Amino acid sequence: MALYWFFCIFALRMKIIVDDKIPYIQEKLWQLADEVVPLRGASISAADVRDADALIVRTRTRCDESLLRDSKVRFVATATIGFDHIDTAYMERAGIAWTSCPGCNADSVAQYVESSLLLLQQEKGLVLRDATIGIVGCGHVGSRVKAVAERLGMHVLVCDPPLGHAGFVPLSVIEQEADVITFHVPLTRDGVHATWHLADEPFFYRLSKVPFLINTSRGEVVDNSALLTALQQGRVRDAVIDVWEGEPRLDEELLQRVFIGTPHIAGYSADGKANADNMVIDALCRHFGLPHPGKVTPPKLPADFPYTGNPLELYDPMTDSEALKTNPSKFEDLRNNYPLRREHFDV
Image (tube, one colour):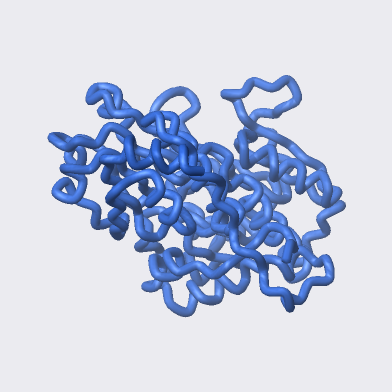
């Protein structure tokens, strides 16, 4: 331990800017730097980062030339799976290392989808064992959702052209056969497999059945205006939406129309957040050659937490939906001050 602190004291001359809503991480960062500055993610400015060595963010901080030009920053980490808020081309030109946290909250999103499916069965008459689910995107999250759907006895169709798996199907098959369609793709705007408005007006007109739709990927993957029209016209039976075009502003008419509407928190379990923290710390230590301060562990549930084995007791997304529908203007507050949620009952 004495040797650990010797190396820390010798090596530290570092300033880290960190999004103040990334939980559990600051104690570890203080063991790695002599200055740690927590700031509101959406407000982090070029002046804030000018003399910083490292920047740790979430999706609300756009990391590009306008933010980082003329700064000392040489390492950027986002404690999220997605990284469309990072200008990776600029990072490469500027010689700034960056990392995201692929898979960190995959189990958390799978928990959200599982609870949503159980609620669709309980409240909307979807018989899971008789239903076909179409999973669009089978990476870290989609593969976990596939396992959940199979465990629930659903027939599973998977579409993911970039992976090219022999057992996968084209999107057209899902459009024709799925009772539930759920999206788990990154947001991309270019190339043959671009996902921006993947579910657009023509998509909704091509649907053969009247499916339920779930989106926990990125808001722009689903054309929100087209989805509202599809719901109104009866082309989609109902929807579970966690991500929205224009966040934190959103279409309030669509919010009130969907079965479940939540403020981009599907991946917000304490377990997923701790996973992201640890991936960020691992990468930070590797980049700067620092001794590792140890793992972040999520808080435990209260000893008197009521749990009988029903997944909805661990997490019921209807609670988050009711909070957002009651106060749509509180989108960011609900997201930034999210209560403790665990994936497992482990007191």
